[in-house]
Length: 521
Ligand code: XMP
Image (tube, rainbow, N blue to C red):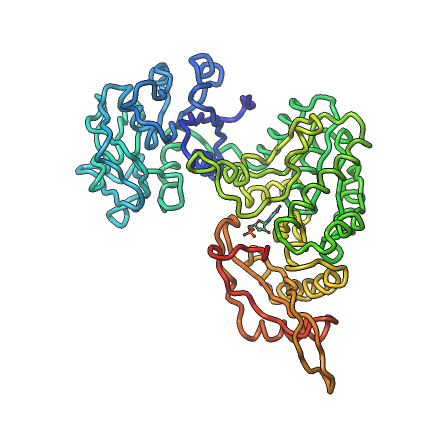
């Protein structure tokens, strides 16, 4: 459980897809929150945890169904502020003597809420409704049809007469829409008003998160050994530095070099971890093994599966050398956790077999340490800064586990990889020189499995074509191509063709995601 010296808010989770976003908004407001599933919240937990306020999340159930989840009734007698969201609103109304009906009230998507007659722009409304109405995102099948005693309507929308309700005396508030999602542009303001009304001063920072994470790691690991697969990416690096701070030399990192890294990458990672941080590091140069197994393979899924399988074997081999490790550390982020649960509850379609060290824990009997599980990418970067990782490292574009293999459509050869590495380095150098690196989510070169004819000087060339890719994105789930100027593209193409032997044609990929993916395979 969390340290008592910070003010704490409890989020009771009724299973909404976006519950973590509530925690994320609260972190942005420097409020420490803890999410507990509804079935884990007993009277005793409430007493022990002594939250300063509670938020009831949305969820897929209907309060009109027998056996649907409820908040502990004692919650409403604790004298603390409560905010119910969507399902949270409905169960709150139901438990406090109101009425909820199902059917005929389905509402998904954008709606506009207006303040009810006589409500001033203060308290929960502070800073809201400046434009008269607020855009909100609704997603519900049931709705409240009678308020619980003590509540009044404070905001309405055409389809949700009880869009915002409240009992200012008890500081109970409830909203039909989701203030935590981006589609409710001023939702964060509403949450902020709630936490200020509840007396939170905003005492929870990334520094506090770091301390808390360190404490939890120590508690989980005790004096056992931990191994961590380093990819050179931001996530595993931040996880490793954080864990090292917690348990020192009980941590050993294994960096598997599959021969599919970018120019200078292996050297950089080894230098940083071994020399700067003094973290025990096994640098496993296994490029012959990987490239040998990939010879003649051109099917993208076979490539991914081959790399994934070998990675596990190699990791296991080196991890055994560490001797007696009981834990495996991973830089799993929150979006990885949500992505792995299909929205419909059924098996989702495999677009690509993502590569990580999944499968290892069961095989090796290891337990997982995942200190970044609750964080989003930008928060991991903030934590990395807090830990003092160099800015250049923190701001790095994501790099996929299978590495250059999936930027080399068709058969992979050492020759093509060498050309690709050089072209990629020139491209990234161009982007940095033009000050564009941080505006772009990810940029890379893909070497194409075609050779084309060109003319250089007075001679004929017959070399590879390559494609430049650069996208903007928030989370990698959707993406837009980056609108480089023609001047930039022209200059970059010239540099690549002049400086990289083996490429005589450069194209720019202007596909968004969807329908494309960010990587080429
Ligand atoms: P796609 O190509 O699926 O990529 O649009 C979305 C983001 O994920 C990265 N990516 C991977 N990362 N293992 C990883 O660790 C993988 O197998 C993998 N495949 C894609 C990709 O670079 C982009 O940031």
